[in-house]
Length: 331
Image 1 (tube, rainbow, N blue to C red):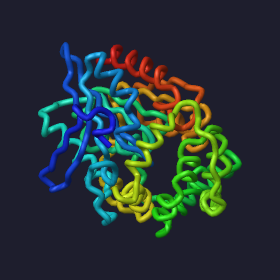
Image 2: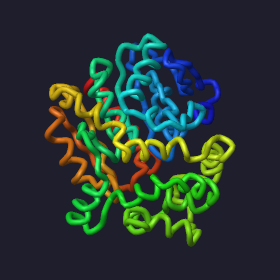
Image 3: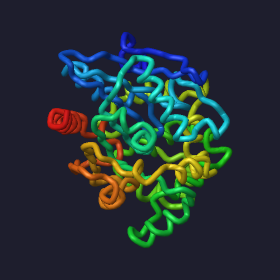
Image 4: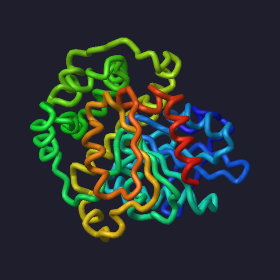
C-alpha cells in the first residue's frame, strides 16, 4: 500500500474512468527521468520499498502504483475490469495526471505482464524497460494454461502454472486470507524449491493449505515487513480477492480479443530493455524468459541474480545498482 512505503510520498487519484488508484509519487531532481514500478502478486507498491528509497535518494522521479485490486486502489469484482488494455490505459492516465510524458518502466511478476502491454498500447510513454524475474510477454491471443503446463512439464519435468487452477477456484481467496502463516510460507519461502514442489505442480498448493504447512522466514524479509504485508492483505482490506482476479481474467480469456487486435509493429520493443533473471525462480525460469523475449526485443540486455522469484527483495542492493547502471547508460 502506497502509504506503507513513506506516508509523505503517498498519493491518490480518481481517473476519468472513475477508478481510484493509490500510489507512491516523488518528483525528480536534476532533470533525471521518472521510474515507473509495477508490482506483481501477491504484492503492492510496498514491495518496491528498497528501490523507491534508493532511487528517490539518487534524484530520480518515482511512481509506484498499487495496481488494480491491490492496496488502497479500487478492487472491482467484475473480471472485465482487469483487462490489461484497461489497466495500461489507467497507468497512462496516472502519468497524464502528473503531466509526465515518458518514464522508465520496471515490472515484476504480473507487473512484467502489464509492462508488456504498456509496450503495446503506450510505447511512446516509455524510454526504456526493465523486467524482473518475468520477462516481456508478447500478445498471444487465446490463453490455455494447460498448453503451458504440458509444455513445461515436458521441458522441465514439472508444470510451471499448476497453481493457477487453485488461484482460479472460488474458495482460494478465503483459504488464503484465513491461513496467514501458510500464505506467507508459500509466498516468501526460505528455500526457493518450495515453489518447485508445493506451488508449481497441479494440486500441490491446495494440499499445502490443507496441511496448513508453514516454514521459516527467509533472511531478506523481517517479521515487521511480514506484519505490514499481512495488514495490506487483511480480510478487512479485501484480502487476496482483487489480486486473484488477474489470474481469473486471464483464464477466462478476457484479454484474448484485445491481444489479437494489437498490430504486429506494436508487438516489437524498440527501446533498450533489461531482463534481470532469477536463477532459482521455478516459475520465471531464466532460459524460458530469455527465449520468449529474444524474437520481440531488439536491444535486450540480460543480467542474472542468484535468487528466487522476489528479485527486488532478495537482492535489493544488486538490483538497485544494476537498474541504476542500465538507466544511466540509456537515458
